[in-house]
Image (cartoon, rainbow, N blue to C red):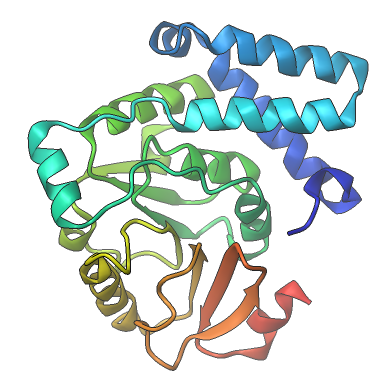
Length: 251
């Protein structure tokens, strides 16, 4: 994987991510939800003041991970559905996919995050590359509640974020032209049903579509009109239709 903190081309995006995470983490409502968050904020601010790049990288990632996990809880009914789907709970997808996504997201794009957790990835995408709408699809009502607090902390208007508290298999993603998904279920332990459902949804979208699949398990389910334009062992980017201009964006 690329070392984003040593890449001059990523400086702007890293700066936006850093400011956005600090804006969330210093919000009073967020601090009430995560009392220990000041520890992570202070570490990052200290590293930034010293200009210590390795410490900045470490402390930024630590703050990101702590915020990403906030609100990770399920009601008994939600837990039953998660178990049925052989689902994973709230794994952080990392910063690299967010930065690589910028080149594909236009001001009129509609982004869908399938299994959004508290929506931190989608919210950061709105900060890095503002666009028409992010659809946050998440089973846990608690994570959606916390995500709305994050949204308010960032000052993102209601029209730019749509929260859908439901099972992924029940939700239409027909409007999306960019889809983000990070390993929502255990593919080798009975979880392939959810990948089949996602594939069925994306296979019916005939217009150009980009899919960012982190820890990819979609490849064997989606149809042949999707081409892999990029993979690095962590992120796989699928594009449809197979157009040279899209496939060359990573070159």
